[in-house]
Amino acid sequence: LLSGSPTLNEALQRANADARFLICYISKGGKKSDAIAIPNLLSPDAVKVMNRKPLGKKQSGDTASYYVWICSEENNSKDTEGAMKRLGVKPPTSRSKGASSSSKKKKSAKGAVAPILAIVHPSSAVDSSGKLRVVPRVLAQHHCRPPPSSPETLIAWMTSIRKRHLREYARLQHARKEMELLRERSEGYASSMKEDKAREEKEERELQLKREEEERELKRKAELEERRKALLEGLPEEPEAGITEGIMTIALRFGDGKRDQRRFVAGGRSVNDVVHWMD
Image (cartoon, rainbow, N blue to C red; front, side, top):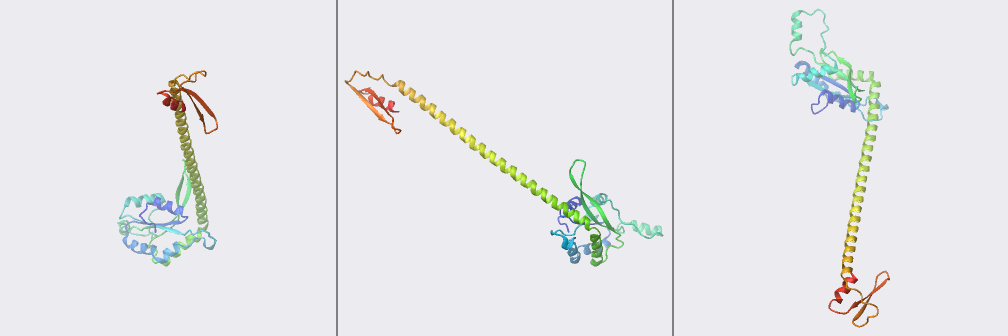
């Protein structure tokens, strides 16, 4: 039994997705018929048969045979009329030909209309827009005068329909496998696209960080060069080589082994000049 009070369209889609036939019971307000049919539909023996594998040992998956959808006119007459129109079914008419006018009036009265009990094949079709949709096809409709009077009678009816339409079950199961494969491929493609996008975003972030780091390094070097230029311009002229009195020579050895030296005038500013030259 489909739970959650789904619409007929939802029930058909669920049956199609799970490769099951759909047993539709549409009540037309006949409480006496409902009291017979609904308990039989929900009986443990009937449910057990509904959950059997339709193809028996030949079936590889765990797909069952039937879902049950029940709709009552007392709860929503609009739903029952819409369901009848979608399925293309009508309440079964009386088999008696010589019915009197009084009996016809009784049959047309509310509560005397027979319910609809039908087994539906939820086949798939592509509409004009290219989208896949479920198209219901009624395989059998019970006369419901009266409805199946016992679970055994209902089970016999369901079993005969199942055996008569094994090819339709096989097609549903094949279509289900194809949809599962398509879904797996689509999910794999979506996952791959997501991973590619994440990788591209990561590479872009890393590239952006690298660019920002390079810009900072260039800016640091430019600022350092400007500072050195300003410090060199601020140094006093180096004394001529012939002058020795009051002159000191500073020699430096760098980490890479290079050496440099400069002559300074010994005096009050000499220390700062040496520091600026070293810098």
